[in-house]
Length: 417
Image (cartoon, rainbow, N blue to C red; front, side):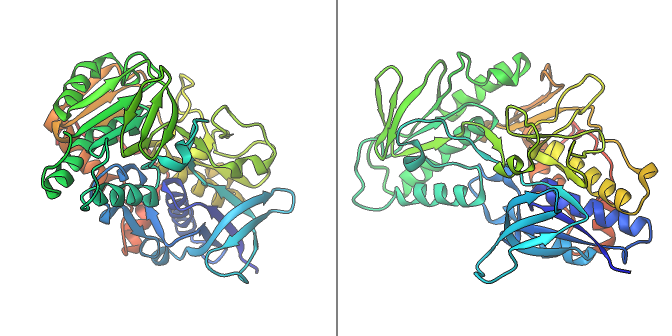
């Protein structure tokens, strides 16, 4: 009997855990010979994207083969460019191989193509700003900051950084940059202007989305890091030497970082189904895409109902990993005709653990972030455990990887470090 094919598009949190979820289901049902699972990703790494704001990047790339090979999942090095739902085909652009496979068929597709930084239409911003949206983006920023120490650089704004956008990513990178800039400035002999980091946001209250419970510790962290928070501020232009604010004021800054929010992968538009305002594909409780037979979606590219109150999933590994597990499991159930054993997706608890640089971190609970669970060094220790252990898949150990792929929701991190 010919094996069925389950194709997973994307090697981020949702994609890797979807592949694990599918392998778990095949193993549980004793049906490993009934289907093959293929994961499409342009490079051989699973990037721990939420760590891209950190100064040390060595540990944020996980070799896919150490997760996929032990559980029999194939990795196809390519970028998915379009989906033909009628023909059940995924168009591909092979990585580094002009004559490679340009399409792959599927019986079940799990779309986990993720999201990317959404830049506003600001003159010069795309050409002259950095980001921590990807491993490559984080590496470019790290190289740029290190290069500021080179002799002969004495331009205005050499030790000034502007971060545009005070969402979670903006807050984290803004709190990291002062120490990174001071270290490079010291290496350059401490010459030039003092280190200065400005965090700009359209909202009147910078970091207001973190809720009132986190407001006091957030202000303390920004002050401790030396970050100047400027709410109600817009940027009209950017160039190699700095930015021009909406007010007309110019700020000299050799480093400009965009943290202006994310939008779902444009691959979602090729499905021909209605999308939400973030470009995400709505899915049902089993994470199936409506009006697209045989297609599931998970992670940042999908919008699912998370709880009985109707809250929608957010673009976060907190939701991407359980969504991936459930989508992978359910895709196998449908392929094998075991629909009665499918699992409904649910993520009733929501927490936020935000890194705030040397000062520490804040840990809030609830969709409105109304409860402050921990702050300072205690929350920092919890964040460190999340970033270095909790969100990583097991490596090399087949049984551990299959067990981790079970379609379960992980409990909230313990408030104890």
